[in-house]
Amino acid sequence: MPVKPKYLNTIEKPSDKGPEPLVGAVQAAEFLDCNERTLRKYAERKQVPAMRMGNEWKFLISVLDAWRKEKLMSNCSEFSVQEER
Figure 1 (cartoon, helix red, strand yellow):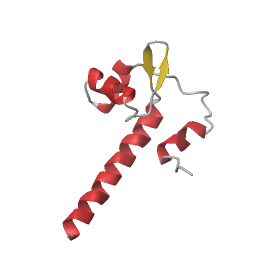
Figure 2 (cartoon, rainbow, N blue to C red):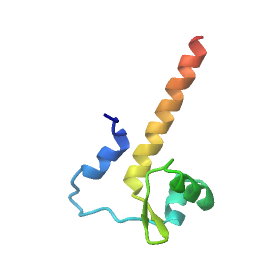
Figure 3 (tube, helix red, strand yellow):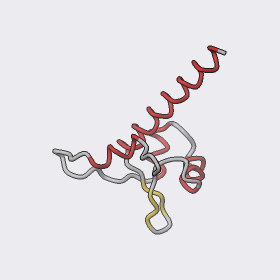
Protein backbone atom coordinates (compact mmCIF):
# COMPACT_ATOMS: atom_id res chain seq x y z
CA MET A 1 0.00 0.00 0.00
CA PRO A 2 1.51 3.39 -0.98
CA VAL A 3 2.44 5.77 1.81
CA LYS A 4 0.63 9.10 1.75
CA PRO A 5 3.08 12.05 1.86
CA LYS A 6 2.92 14.07 5.07
CA TYR A 7 2.07 17.30 3.26
CA LEU A 8 -1.28 15.85 2.17
CA ASN A 9 -2.38 15.68 5.82
CA THR A 10 -2.61 19.48 5.89
CA ILE A 11 -5.61 19.38 3.54
CA GLU A 12 -7.66 17.44 6.06
CA LYS A 13 -7.18 19.82 8.98
CA PRO A 14 -10.27 21.90 9.78
CA SER A 15 -9.84 25.65 9.84
CA ASP A 16 -11.55 28.20 12.08
CA LYS A 17 -11.39 30.74 9.26
CA GLY A 18 -13.17 28.61 6.67
CA PRO A 19 -11.66 26.89 3.68
CA GLU A 20 -8.29 28.08 2.46
CA PRO A 21 -8.51 29.77 -0.94
CA LEU A 22 -6.81 28.23 -3.93
CA VAL A 23 -4.15 30.37 -5.58
CA GLY A 24 -2.91 30.41 -9.15
CA ALA A 25 0.56 29.63 -10.43
CA VAL A 26 1.69 33.26 -10.19
CA GLN A 27 0.95 33.55 -6.45
CA ALA A 28 2.27 30.05 -5.75
CA ALA A 29 5.51 30.79 -7.62
CA GLU A 30 5.94 34.02 -5.64
CA PHE A 31 5.45 32.08 -2.40
CA LEU A 32 8.02 29.45 -3.41
CA ASP A 33 10.33 32.10 -4.90
CA CYS A 34 10.58 30.28 -8.22
CA ASN A 35 9.71 30.86 -11.86
CA GLU A 36 6.04 30.45 -12.77
CA ARG A 37 6.85 28.36 -15.85
CA THR A 38 9.04 26.04 -13.78
CA LEU A 39 6.23 25.58 -11.25
CA ARG A 40 3.78 24.72 -14.03
CA LYS A 41 6.21 22.11 -15.40
CA TYR A 42 6.56 20.57 -11.93
CA ALA A 43 2.77 20.49 -11.59
CA GLU A 44 2.39 18.75 -14.96
CA ARG A 45 4.99 16.16 -13.91
CA LYS A 46 3.28 15.76 -10.50
CA GLN A 47 6.46 16.86 -8.73
CA VAL A 48 4.62 19.48 -6.66
CA PRO A 49 1.16 19.24 -5.04
CA ALA A 50 -1.31 20.94 -7.37
CA MET A 51 -4.71 20.47 -8.96
CA ARG A 52 -5.83 21.25 -12.46
CA MET A 53 -9.01 23.30 -12.87
CA GLY A 54 -9.82 23.68 -16.53
CA ASN A 55 -6.61 24.88 -18.12
CA GLU A 56 -5.19 26.44 -14.93
CA TRP A 57 -3.12 24.99 -12.10
CA LYS A 58 -4.31 25.76 -8.56
CA PHE A 59 -2.40 25.42 -5.31
CA LEU A 60 -2.96 25.62 -1.55
CA ILE A 61 -0.28 27.70 0.13
CA SER A 62 -0.41 25.61 3.33
CA VAL A 63 0.18 22.41 1.32
CA LEU A 64 3.03 24.02 -0.64
CA ASP A 65 4.60 25.18 2.61
CA ALA A 66 4.39 21.68 4.14
CA TRP A 67 5.72 20.16 0.89
CA ARG A 68 8.65 22.58 0.84
CA LYS A 69 9.52 21.84 4.47
CA GLU A 70 9.36 18.09 3.83
CA LYS A 71 11.64 18.45 0.79
CA LEU A 72 14.13 20.50 2.80
CA MET A 73 14.17 17.93 5.60
CA SER A 74 14.62 15.01 3.20
CA ASN A 75 17.48 16.84 1.45
CA CYS A 76 19.15 17.48 4.81
CA SER A 77 18.87 13.83 5.85
CA GLU A 78 20.26 12.68 2.47
CA PHE A 79 23.19 15.06 2.93
CA SER A 80 23.97 13.75 6.42
CA VAL A 81 23.90 10.13 5.19
CA GLN A 82 26.31 10.98 2.37
CA GLU A 83 28.56 12.83 4.81
CA GLU A 84 28.87 9.74 7.07
CA ARG A 85 30.27 7.58 4.24
